[in-house]
Image (cartoon, rainbow, N blue to C red):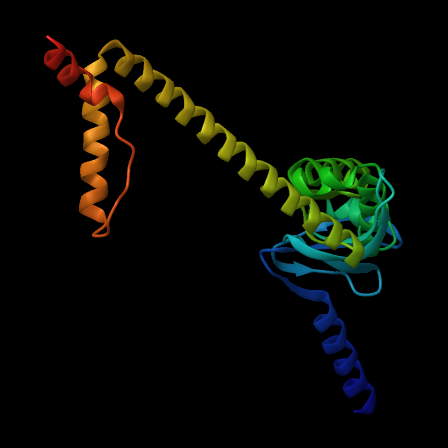
Length: 248
């Protein structure tokens, strides 16, 4: 009876290891006596005990956080840059057979590529052309990981940590740029006002009476807005017509 019980236990144990349920997003890479057979799944998979060995692979997109890397840009600015990478396994056989640990290998390759690409760019490029930097890193990683059966679909720079002295310098630069724009706008306004005044003077000079009417209109506006006594010079042009009539 003990032999039969032991035999039953062995059969149950072997049958438990022989039956594998593989989810839709998983694959089993089978090795038979050390030789690669291929991937199986999804669904109910039978694996020969002892003879076959199965390794489970997740084919969903994996999100990898690249830790902050010390980078010296092409214009000699020291900073820290971190990123996030999205990749997935598209060939399970190569992911198992061509590289020992594809996740660790992709992580290390991402760190070195991030330092290399960011170090070859200037600070202004990192701050203003992130899409170009992202595409360049993604292209390099996708090319390097293709023999491993890995597809890198997206790379995004998350944060660029500038040293405090560089932040202060950029703040001063931004303030100076705003002052420059304000002065240019003010000068353009003065120039446009001068042009309009020149045009108005040309029109008024063509009609001498218009200057007198404009002068009287200005006095009327002053009298309306201010209830105080206003002293103003009397242009000789206003009384010239009366003096000429009296002389006649």
